[in-house]
Image (cartoon, rainbow, N blue to C red; front, side, top):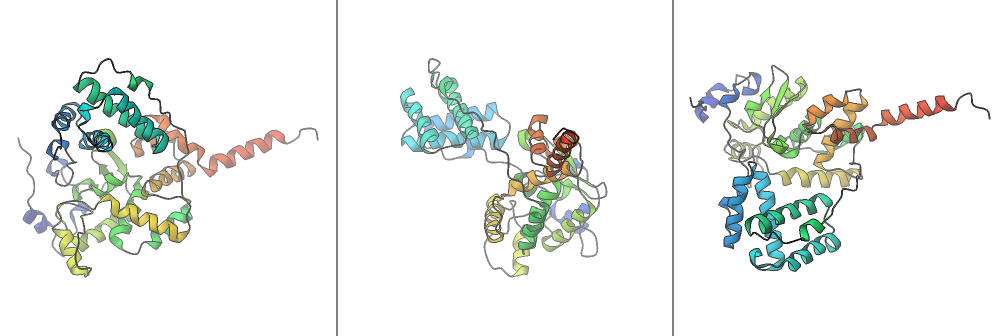
Length: 344
């Protein structure tokens, strides 16, 4: 049976000026439309070459996530743009020269190089049938195990206090309070907030995985007050769009938006704010790192933090053990105890 999707008038009828927004009461997940969630699909792009069109179709058959298909297609477009030709006409030596260029001159990060190599292997070996090419087995790009940047609790408070516009401060605060990725936060809908249960439903996270994370009552109340400003029938963080900065007109544009707020809006904002505050390193994703580190410092079990972050492997979460002041302090105390009583 096809699930019923509430229309705009139905939702607006539920949210009169005297009634609480939909985040106050749990809604059936079957009633949650996927408006604003559908990622970019390379099949719908304008393809300069037939080989790129065929590659977009191959990606659609191979991968379910639109973000994965877009990332792979983009990597092949970068190779095509660099060579100024149809990628299907490139030789193995030209592909090798490209990877030398991005590794030694562009200084791409290992993860990006590995993604580009996997994309190229799929295109040249599986689509075009160059089974004899050895270039992909020659590419090595190991991670350098750099520890992620983490802000102190005081820096987080200063950063949030520095962001005056509520439409930007609320999603940034939510990212820190729930450990969300940027795309996970901006794609939230009113159906994902279970205020009475104290839970936030994260849909289609990394790898297409869903998860439930706790959300505190104070954060739920912030979301309710913010939603009352724009009253969008579905999205929590609708796109503001361009136009007048008058509050009523901004709210009207947000109420009729068809897409969530773009990720670049918050990314630029954090970059400017950290420079003005003198914080050495901070991005939107740093708030997620800070959430995990501060939880572990407060005594949260590492396995619980793993589930909250949506990590597949515990090793990914264990990096935060190296960043906590509590771990460092415990080690100092243990070392001091070992040294006590020794002959001087």
